[in-house]
Length: 203
Image 1 (tube, rainbow, N blue to C red):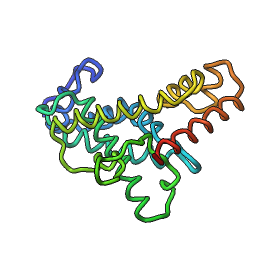
Image 2 (cartoon, one colour; image 1 turned 180 degrees about the horizontal axis):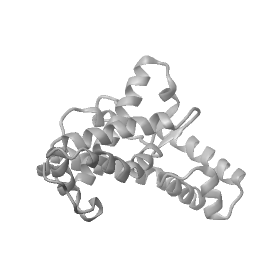
Image 3 (cartoon, rainbow, N blue to C red; image 1 turned 135 degrees about the vertical axis):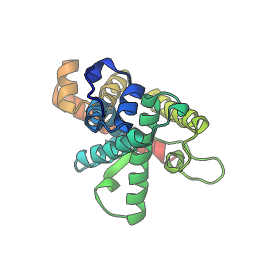
């Protein structure tokens, strides 16, 4: 293989994945590191009710790896495809944990409340489906956006701000520093947010 001299930072995702498929293995590590922030954001879209969030981070990284491995340029942007693969991996892990009735992922609550019409199944089960066509990708993204809006609508102004920082991947200490609040007040806000999401999930 001809030695590649252009820095990865100057290439777009499609160019990088083409290089990877030509045998340039370091591209995989570069893309995993580049989009690790997205994994953390999506993992934070699931509220931890106890345990270690690294379990979800690990699942999300598996989803990111699958996205890099399976990406087809015809489905659209890599970012959108990666986002979907990460979401699917996280929700599938939660679903599997619920079936087993044990394990660390049982303590995670997905940020979802809508139920599939007519069958009483939580909407996030749809993310575990095998089809990855562009139409389904659009539906999945729109559904997630709708659910997040439902959650935001039920939060106070301060809770919404805490919620957004949480989705960005911040922990309660970082949020407290950013907002100029005490860690206790942020922790209390997170507890209220969790309670509201659990109530929403029970609808």
